[in-house]
Length: 100
Image (cartoon, rainbow, N blue to C red; front, side, top):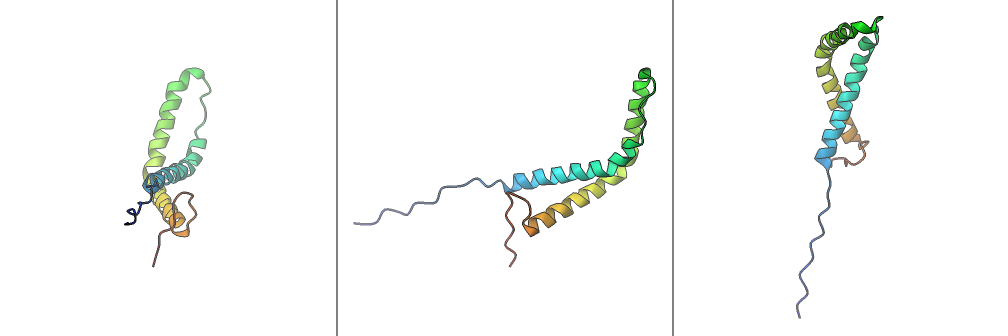
């Protein structure tokens, strides 16, 4: 009698790419908020409730002025943090690459 054919191990779902994208998005949002928030804190609330449109326009202009040059910096910081976290094995769900 011949032995039964070997069984293949069952496939397991390992969402490395999805987790990497989620970590990148999280780090990007966190660094963006950290870089833009100090300027937004300087925008004063309107004294008159009728001036809500003017206050919103001021906040939008402040965000455009401040966020534009700082978003590439936030993206670079997010990428650097992600690469460091992956290489050091600090991010849960993402295994450290085999660097031989």
